[in-house]
Image (tube, rainbow, N blue to C red; front, side):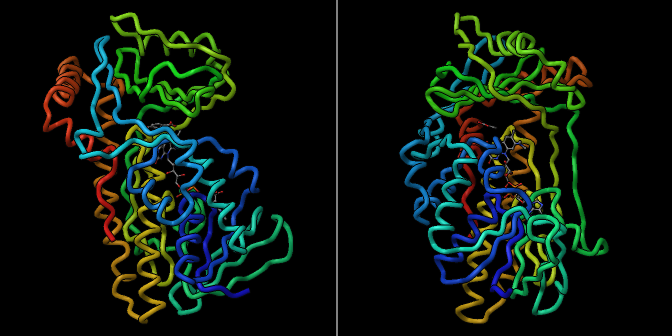
Length: 394
Ligand code: RFL
Ligand code: PHB
């Protein structure tokens, strides 16, 4: 098999890249280790930056998002039993927070890809990358995990295979530098069948730990609580989860959290991670393959989309003019924005979680930070600008 761009991974990065390249007349093949129903059923992110929404619309894949997504004009930060609204819309000159689940974005992108006759090979195994420092890099894999070894030769490889995929590991260790911070807490996330308890997202800082109230639809809500990352989900009964949610989200003005049956629950760990560079020879890393943020800033999916936009631009210039400067600066262009999103995600995480190693002094500083960011227009504006997403650099 031969294609112009071989893409490893059908997450938001790989699927959006294939679609954007298609719009430029550039061919690609995606290989994906999971099945279509697995990628379309995995519950992950929920919040889209304004730039992601605009790009989905420009690329012609935003129709269902505009119909079924929720467009919020603010978020609430809750602490000391009181809610404080950040008016994102007003502070950013009219931008919104869009809540539209990642697996819905995936469904829309898969449908667009297949409708355009694009190839996605699901359920592959034994994926390996070869000859990255030549002009004909190769991807080898097995169809249906155990079939004959197959090979795709291409001009470029896009490593969009998430944090655990083989792409980043194919860059020589002598070239790769990794920066990492692992947080001493995790998130227990649930999906519930209930109407929304609030019109906008609520991020709560509480003595018992962080809590987040998000949404999915008028019937399904998404909630998270800070837990120990080593906790076994079996030790979290529904009753225990509700007790924590009520306590952590409680306010002094009688606001009530609406309960409903818990239809899904799981625990994730939290880390910040960046690798330098995001390219090696003809391999370009995009999304979680190159960087991870803790979910508190709602940035992961959005960063993945921003990376592939930069990559698509560089590839389009290469295929129309043969010029490589833009491709050569891919890593540097992406990393400037990545580090700002890392900073914001770390900031939100630090400000909102309970740090059990903090002294009483540090705890007071955290509350002062919350008081400042919710009462100073300058500080609220900075939070709002970062939350809706810094400009994409293309
Ligand atoms: P993905 O989505 O991990 O996709 C990678 C794909 O590659 C496949 N793969 C392979 N394919 C072929 N061969 C191999 N050897 C392969 N190994 C892996 C995988 O099966 C997969 O399909 O990476 P991508 O595209 O870079 O997208 C990144 C986002 O998924 C991620 O950053 C976000 O989900 C993070 N995130 C959030 N991001 C936001 O922007 N807003 C949010 O509100 C938000 N909330 C969240 C989140 C992540 C969460 N979890 C579960 C980590 C909330 C949570 C709870
Ligand atoms: C979600 O709805 O899953 C969600 C919302 C905001 C975040 C993280 C996750 O910061």
